[in-house]
Image (cartoon, rainbow, N blue to C red; front, side, top):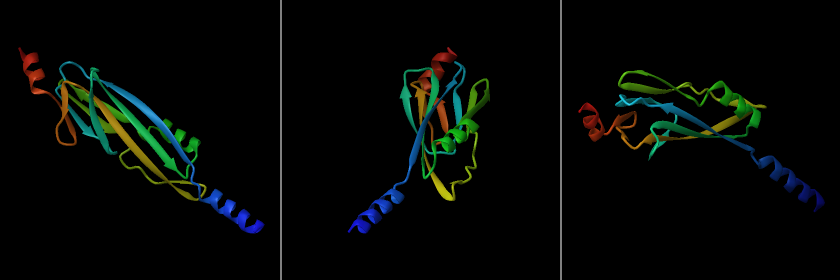
Length: 144
């Protein structure tokens, strides 16, 4: 009986998978003349309007079978970051890492779950799944 109990605890301890998480925040300024934001984002994302005048990106990362220092390393390297570029009326947000090679830690495959939420200004809307556009009434008012 004692051996059975020890075996059960050993099995339970080995079957538990360590999960580490981190949340990363980024903000991107949107100049008044910008009417179009192209999105080339590797991860799936959801969009929510907010009262701000910039784009805030909240990225929640979870690794299974990993260690906190592994996640910290990839965050520091910018694996989950977006980069912005653009001119005049157009802006682009692009994932820094569009390849996302697999991860291993101590001979274990590490699985990652990335959930991204984009908070966009109320005067913008999602057009398809890869573009934000300024709402029509905002564009008309700016032209006058």
